[in-house]
Length: 303
Image (cartoon, rainbow, N blue to C red; front, side):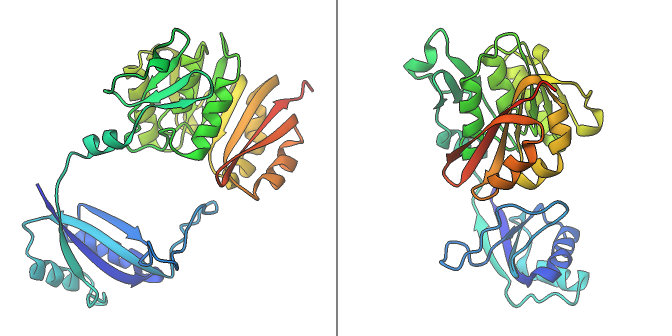
């Protein structure tokens, strides 16, 4: 069924009040947008610092309600919930319902990485190259978790994994999101993959994708407090640069002597400091670039 969308403009300092009031009057979802989106003045927010929630100076707060909610009554309820809200910018529109899963699948086409790794949605026919005997095919439904292969950071990591000899190895996917990297490693021959993520949705998504790919028996997924700390010959961490910096010692400790690591989620210009940081534990540090993003790889020293 269709939905009613309400948009309001506010200052960043007041965003929490608007979000709270909208939730109190029954909003099914509340989304924050840049009111200058799709204009030359749009301000991109690419990476927050630890503990930061950066917002634009002005925000567009967009809330969804059932389509049968009376508009005048909704505005009156908002005013009663917080008389200080400025409702003068309020605008409504009807949002047609659609099959969001179908819409996503229509845009998600089979993608190749390296020489034999394929990420595909559940239902399409496989391209001829993906039917090769040595093809590593991951059928994916990322759900609400990050990682479908379409982002440059994920692609960089997939290409790196594709170039390794993973036969019989154990792989740690730190910040696993949808599980795409852990599952690709298993399809490429790894004996076992461990995923770690601080988002419970990522734990669910990785577990579900592992089950659907028939490799759940070789996949383990943990929230950070539950992770059994161990060392691995292969570690991949596709997270943000600020987190890679903060977790450098912990990630280095998870790589076995002589093992390899791939770090991604790094914007151009952030790689220099991270290369210096990780040089305390790793040799052969190499930077690879794709679009505005980079990947750093290295080998753990024996001592």
